[in-house]
Length: 142
Image 1 (cartoon, rainbow, N blue to C red):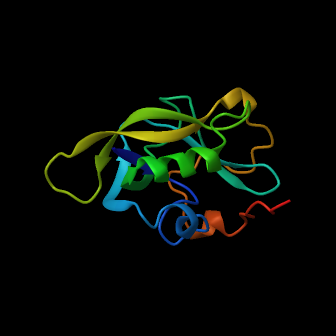
Image 2: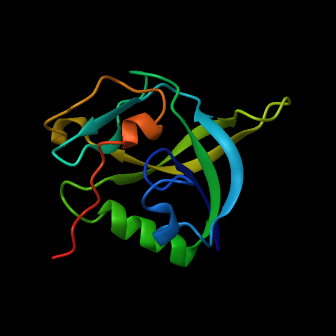
């Protein structure tokens, strides 16, 4: 089965987790959220996280991908969706930033409960770019 996934952080093309999780995904283009969200960097590793608080922040810029079940399961594991403090996979509305005619889609995005996000280390960002990613530290394998 195929799924649409909106990625805004380290899974985007050219960022640290892309080659480990997204090489089988089909890139559909640059998209942004229809609603505003808060995208912040948090914790000692400067991890990007979009807070599950629609209406606050910016229209977040990211990339839309079509993924199969195996790819989606890998992303779910990376984002810790079954962990108490992990991300939650939600369906949100996104629109194309590249196409002239309206192109709105519903896609999965990985959001965090704002009450669980401690140690915020940035302002609300409209996009996770190379400058924001410069301080990111990948997990070390135990």
